[in-house]
Length: 302
Image 1 (cartoon, helix red, strand yellow):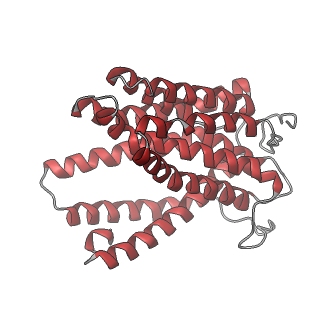
Image 2 (image 1 turned 180 degrees about the vertical axis):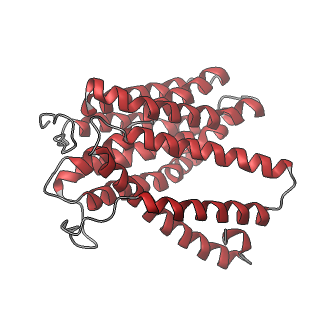
């Protein structure tokens, strides 16, 4: 809400830093709540929570289109949306699980334990690859695949839509094949999406971005669920914070790294490392612990 009222670059940067810091805290808290709620269910539901996150992005884009069609100014649009969602957020806190006073959340700042390294690596790789679809889909379609502006604009839409659908399907598939096998299969699907995209043909590349979104959709939610559930003697919040931080690092580094590689070679070449990162996700999925303390049956430790 305050972003639209920023006067000058310095103030805008400062407001965005505060905004990013707050959003990071909310993401960790929301995922921790999701894991705690999931523990009272007979199956996994984290994927559905993340699907609603993707759906919120699509709704936000739709609201932006409506605001544009009504000729609302950016300030008016941001103030209305900010005030509305601030109200919704405050009201929603009335139904959140309170902090368990008997649970030790550990030190405020700490490095992730060795048991969490695999989860952190999966989160980093998954969100690094996500930058391919989030930040570079339209550019790739227009420059490398020589697609029309209309097709190029559909790249991000296809990626986001399949991400949402994949996250709704993730919970059912995890209960069917297990979380470790799920991560391996979906990493392979994501790699297939990158490979199809690299064919650099308008329609095929558009389909590739859709496949990529479908493959990446459930990896992060499942990794967060496993990290928050695998050790009944450890608090959930530090584990979620560690994996989320690693994921954010990949999300921040990925688009920049792709841009730097593309500047010296080509955008097609810059997408190739994503294939290697998908392989790394498969590797790390084989070394992470998978015993959970949800109400469903526990798996055998990998």
